[in-house]
Length: 464
Image 1: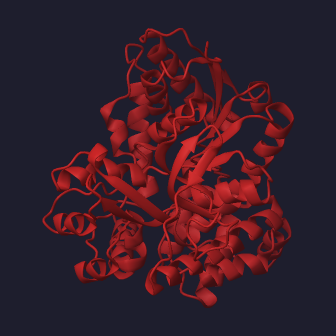
Image 2: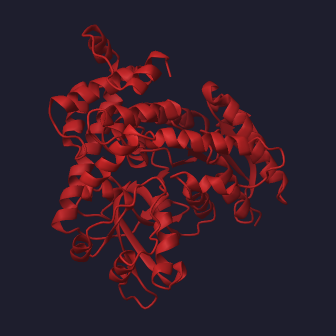
């Protein structure tokens, strides 16, 4: 039977990750026959869209396949008849991330893209946009799958299900991919010899590993980590080792982002050192981005450059391509995704979004049961999920009290007057992208609240 040709729309198509997405689709063309790809971006991203779009077309032209890459600033032009919509956008671009990081650091608390105050504000800016995309999809491509890797991926994906009432959505993260690429070799195995079981939330999961005979080898991998072997920590996370005694009793491997919770003191110290010297991660990424786009401009470049691996999101796009291919061909591949819990993690309600090992096929993600967690992990998980629910509700409603509740619940934000001050400054800094909080922002402006950090204040005053 001839396969139906596929139309893919990528929102945030001007991203530096798009060449990785193209590479993944080219690699899988025989099982995923794409007829057209639409890259969508906004006016502020027009130049990058044109650079990346030209390179994407060169990549396809260098392949044996005849695929046309379309570029547009109007997503409603792109969406009709789409089979898959991937989302990889950043509301406010990298300048917004700079503010997310620098404002909390200026008060001595963690500034990070998906954790703490910065992660909360990324959700506040992003969730209304993803919900507007869903409304367009309901009208223009009601049968399409939404594959989200816009951060904070877990909360954004959950908002699509909970507030967008859209079930055909899967959230992705590169962190499990990195672990599964690197961990097997630490114990002299290959991935196809091992079975992985992940459970938790996006950027807050744990996993266990079993060998081809069904024996658990989690402890062997933990031991190998302390022999200095590379366990696949993302490029954007400072590598402070976990306490081995904690992992020995846990008998699970935490994801890289758990360092922000299990070694909060040391991670905060490192972040503050960068803040006071070379600049925060976003300021460093700006440099990498500039280098990448200079490379992408080369009319002879028709493959993904090595420098892309320096970005913390390396392998994201490959996970997206495999997910899409698995849905299209009903492959039932094991992929770690954000999806509806449905009892896989009994410590959370069935309707909660969780990041778990799943089989991906024509009906989407079928979460694999993990079972109950031990008290320490269960306590962390339930605290973080309830914090996420407060964030999502505040993002949709603009309820300042609910935003304050999220701040007070978040383990990276010491509660008190300083937490409220950071919340208020971030609201001012992101005024352009937070219409739901307009009344509160006007009140703060009338009260004369200002932004303490010089860089964030200057960006805000310039409207950036």
